[in-house]
Length: 258
Image (cartoon, rainbow, N blue to C red; front, top):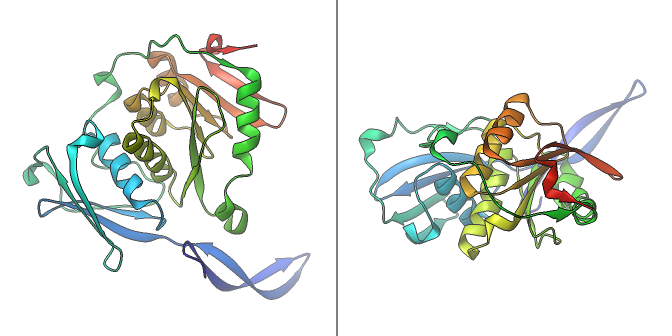
């Protein structure tokens, strides 16, 4: 067992033969975010980068408008309790009964929608070669994915340069919250950034990028049709179907230059 995986005995079937073996499985833990005595949410997540996850979740769900809105952060690892003090009041009556946000489901406490934002209008372009180089860097970076095949991972690139770090989680939403939360803490310039995701881009994932004003969203996989429609509405450069020798641009191809 590592900090983020656990070994399980399993039966492997190959070419009709069954054998007992041990495999590494990604850990999934419940972390509850509490503010001023109010339970905001319980996130089922990988037990890594919890501060980044908290900041990203609160921002992408509309609870805060910047990292400065969190005046204190305390993590009780033993009890999996995240205690934050927010400068913005949270009315318990406006929250449903505490719900667990399972891996892979739409976040419940989203308090905003794409209609609250203006289309992105950035004169920011990136060379094809830089995107291709970053794709090659990103594709094989997740150590936990290599050992478990059970996590999603995300990274942010500034101006098409190599990302500094990837963020991994059993839930795709959490992986994006972690990378954007880290960027909030570091006061990263979202307007000149590229978001790389191992997961398929759905409208919910794209909404997080729009919330952060990220002009490029890039995924290994094809996006959903709702994500493409939303990208067109909000002027997001949407790239998918990543291969070692190329990719598909679904919207705003003029931002990708030779």
